[in-house]
Length: 404
Image (cartoon, rainbow, N blue to C red; front, side, top):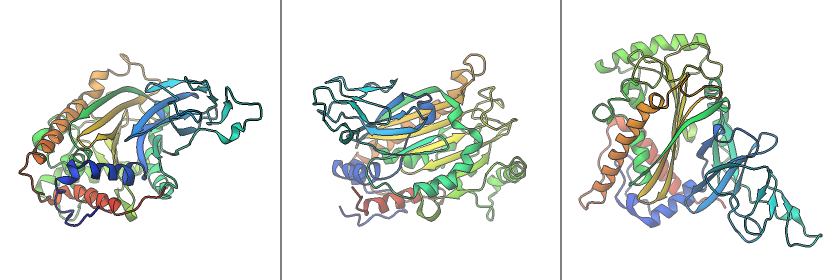
């Protein structure tokens, strides 16, 4: 597949949003071959808990074993190929295939091979594993082997930023799935800039400054419209130093696939809410007092996450087809927080539920336009530099032959 003619200063030619052939290439070279964010430790808090997932045509599940480790396996029995776990989530201490009752333990070892002779080599027929890495409670998987070795460097750089929130000690207060009638890249491109925020996201811009969120942190060329944000940032950086909270921008270093930064919240907000108050009364992890900032993490190709003192919001994008995309949002609170006492789901989810709906409309509208017949690649503004970075990364991935 030729990538001639791609200029990361422009949006992609239409075929990259509409071609089934290119979509299959993306699955193989990106979603099967790179580290992909798919879940978090709060999805499977107890031994035996599992969550079933799918990327493209590949079905797999994550499960916590008796030792508390997160394991991952393809969702297929080694006997006759029947799927092993059913439903999105569940708990079991033995994995029993519903077809012929072959049975596996939580480490994927075959322990009962019904119908086979006593000398059958059970040890040769364990479940087919996938690569799993956990960073600060966020779970990444790679379906092809060998998996990229860069996960260790990402973990060492990103882990300290996530540690204060102690995500493994949270629970999922709410999960909402949206199936958007658009190509997955348009969802990501939309997320990677905030040029569209002032005219489309009134709720989001209550707690967020569009300046730092979408424009980066250029402290040398401050525009008049950004002065208030930069003054607040300077003030908060001194506070973060005193609290030993990591805050420096890390932006796709040395070709790695993540970006993180801590930013002050706007309008005296202390969380992603419409009022200057917490969405949950219980603070997370090692945080001892109200602190009006948010830590944001973006990972290629499919996620963004926001860590507040009282809750965490994670987003995962799963391509279903060339023109359908699942966007999964989870709101996490402290494990001992009580609904109706410490938090209200409507208040907790208000800002990002509204923002998700607005972004869905934008991404679907862009797809309709791109498929309408008159589309030509359009120039990207300086403020859309993270879209340029994503498209450059995307271009690089499609020119690499993945390992198998």
